[in-house]
Length: 303
Image (cartoon, rainbow, N blue to C red; front, side, top):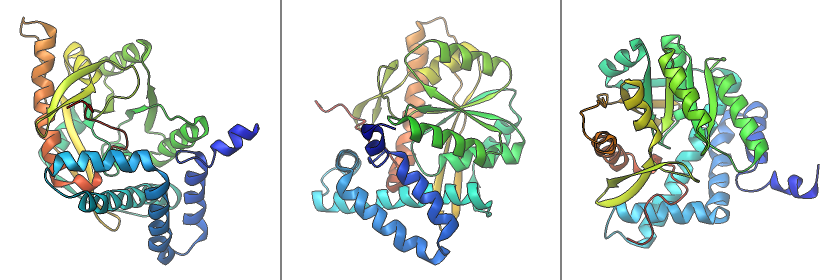
């Protein structure tokens, strides 16, 4: 292993921290978790400066007129929630300890579980990894998760293995790239009756984009879920996993977004679906702002 690769393990998004979390869960008593996670949160609050600045910038838009001090305190709370959610996902992976969860929108969740195929559109919020595993377990269906590429290869391998282990083999992971191959693969998966889960609250890299509006501001969102929904003719279910307490979550499902060919330009049909998604996403972020783990800028800086 080269020196650069060795040092990369200890970067903010390096694999060391994930491996340390797994070790701590197996080797440390449960009452040590709060202390451990507090100091981890404190560490990343200062050393993951780009992520902290992104969260503070988003909070300034969600809470216009709020002070910088208040938003920094809110950012710390957000990072603390992130520490707890990845910790509790690791606990489930390693120990299979049960979690409590409340379903909000049970009608839509049952409909999703029975759908021939569908797209789950979610956000970087709450414990979406654990949510995918619980969905697969509840409905005995495989789910294919599409994630952004990790900058560190070892971290990507660890996350993929963790997700597949958490889902007992029913959760498959694909990484989003700018190429067309994945899009065709996902389209074939939908036509074959699979459930595809995509995070739709930000765009990274050179992926196809579409413009929406959140909190009165223009925002760039991934175009892929809406194109897939239109071409495959499958419903898009907004679904979020929000942490409500110690090992306790809310599964929030909203009415599906159905994109239909109307004879207009395809961009107009997609724009209608994007507007509905933005309306739901803004509502959920407003009520669970401390669980929106958008650690890269979402809103264009020139507004």
